[in-house]
Image 1 (cartoon, rainbow, N blue to C red):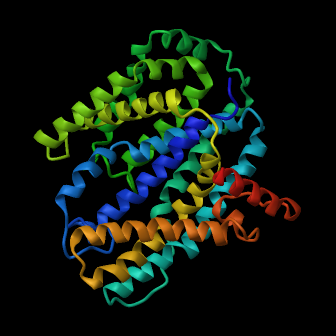
Image 2: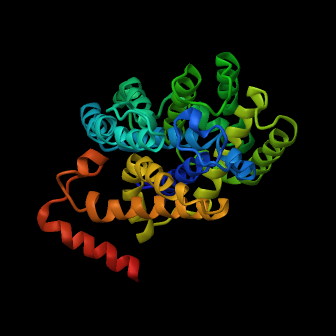
Image 3: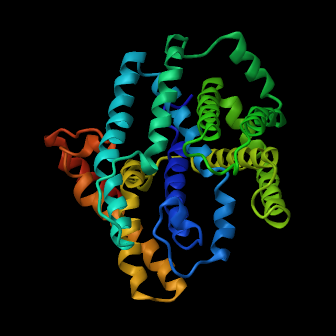
Length: 365
């Protein structure tokens, strides 16, 4: 079994990129200001059609991937080492971000709308990290299990998954969760029981799917076209008949089918090393932490220029992505003092520039 899964790294990178695009799109929705985004005076309902395709599964996918990461980590660490590592990589950036990152974009919002400027520490968009850290604490007891997970329960799942179509049984807990918590909108995950329990389920099953081994990945790969067809069909039903707010059981089924399709296609086509992936997988976490500052700054600077809608969308998207990558490349990545604040390991000084040059050379090749 592989210790490094490049497809999962790619999915994490892609999910973060989609998150940035999704947040840019909110700027151009008529309700953006109600959830704390700077809002364009001209909105675009058309822009929300593809974004609505993402909003049922982009966050659950990250929870799945986070659970998978913990399972991989436990192959090399005991529970104390895992807790120490996740405290450094999750809790420290969460505390730092809540105190010094989130307040900056809140101040930009306040200035744009001529509000009183105030220091407002909060989790903000980093709420995801607080959930992940709690899930790690909940699951840490499994570190005492045999790393091959050679137990009746896991062996039963391995036999079950020899029939690929039975992966869809794992949708049932997500349907039950959605129906029991009954959120106003399935895609609203912040600050409610639905988001916390859904994230916990996704994290747990992400761990479980790695623990049972290759049989899960073979199953999702075989069923990837069916999963994609089911997800896209349910999306069309959501679009045409429910104005993007279907019954919760349909939303849950669509969500997990998108995720199974993503796992299947990624395992088939993306599970191979790449110098670009090596770079982007390091950048993804810091970019997630800082992106709201540059998104709000882009909206603050560009919207008053009164370009047409399409130009604004392009400029704000480019400004956000380019600024995030420049901040990562020339500040976060290069300064050992701040790397841990963004979830990155400190690089020994004598190796730092050698590694930097090696990555740059690989990318140029």
